Image 1 (cartoon, rainbow, N blue to C red):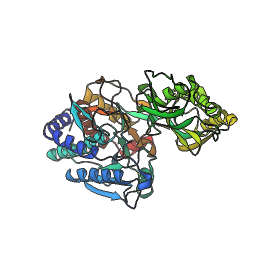
Image 2 (cartoon, rainbow, N blue to C red; image 1 turned 135 degrees about the vertical axis):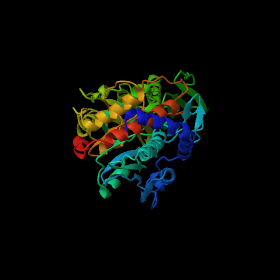
Image 3 (cartoon, helix red, strand yellow; image 1 turned 30 degrees about the vertical axis):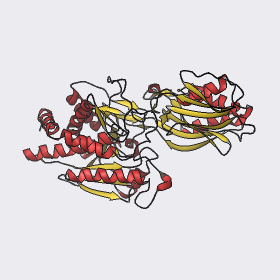
Length: 478
């Protein structure tokens, strides 16, 4: 088949199956599948939500005619048999970050508005995963009609722990060989050939002596710009004003409640958000509300919060492929008498997680504060001119009528966990979107139906393009 014939087959499939695809997305998004480690159990290592979503995704794949299997609740597979056991792969995930506050739609009940789907997971990554599963079905049906063989088998890998550590993939790779090449529909278009390193940590203050902050909390996940933050503080200043970012109410005499509002976004692109913790900490300091012990830590914290390039705490770095480092203060809490600030750093090849930790420790130790590493991943980078990258790029160009270039990204996807892989849509950050349409990890997460339909076509074409490559070409990224 050629690309023109495949595009016609994809259009026909969309005409017939789009309502069913939307129903599949809605069924999957109805499950609040954020990780709950404290509720882990045999068969549900990441908690009941991810396990339920994994089961539902495999049920969808089964209805599409694929052979499915689940490995102890860690990860699932859906296989399309080709002419050989050699295998291409697609990997998506069905776990999500918690809904958080600020929604104008029901987060777990997919809404349709003005050609957009709204709900937690519609773009990260339940919607794209469903679309890619249907793309496998479409390609298989199109080739069956012509009698053309499918040279390689195709495996869709269903992850359940992408947002909080990727232990699912670690489990999978211990028990399975890698595909010759795979892509993840959990990125941006056109094609990502590299991902920044990830350093996630907690900055912890010295034990607080005299304290004015009774409670403080903000952020729902370490990998997201926080949209909400709150503090309760003791103060004799009865004239504290509310501002555009911080609302002040009085719970009782001498105790003020401060509620800060920002705009949530993924930590990989802090320019898309407005950090509510930054607004809250600035207010506390500007109005002289912290005690001396609290101020010592919060002044350092403000240097992190106010500079998303990391320069405030000596973390700045850049390179030609990835550009500048980003740093986000993503969560905050009061724990065991200490202030604890979560941090997410996306870094290029010119620094390392170890160097970042040393730089933070050098700034924190003079005031008795410390840094604890939570999670790290090294940068992932392959050559953009290899055959698989170019095959996916050709598919995107044919589906959109454009001519695009591959790129690197700051997000951390499953691609970095495999020997030969790439990120392949469906996000398009530069595309116009309504003011009410939120982004992934934020409230009112939304994706346009047209974007998902275009992604479907790109996935059909991309899979076919990969099927035409030799094993040596497919492994060229390794």
